[in-house]
Image (tube, rainbow, N blue to C red; front, side, top):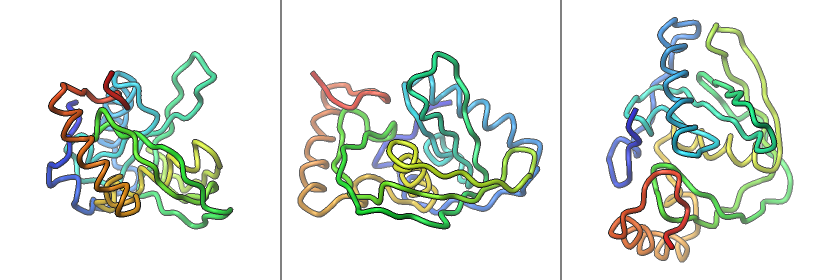
Length: 175
């Protein structure tokens, strides 16, 4: 699968609900996970690969040698908590840059797995941030809309320079 890069209008559209248990979601999620790993990502939303469906794959276990992606179908944030923190975020659809984004550190999300079972996942740190970032994609929101206005101006300028320098998905900086 090919990563959709900004400013593609697909990244600004709200993704459509999936039918929980739809057998085609298993194949889609496997292809998305492979694309995520091939581009050194820890999360990927379907709109980032040109599919306007509410499905994301994540794997925030940076310590493990094994790949163990989690697929979330129709994810909904049911709770965030903690004092919002600013941290640099990268995005496969915005290669070559990282952007300071303020988010609560903890998120709890309700979703369906690929078999149609209702589940919940909760986490803080990288997992909490990744859940919020990927669900933003399902709502048509990129890092450019997630950061403050001053950071957005810098991010847009840096992104243009990174693309001109040949940035590819998975890169968060250009040397």
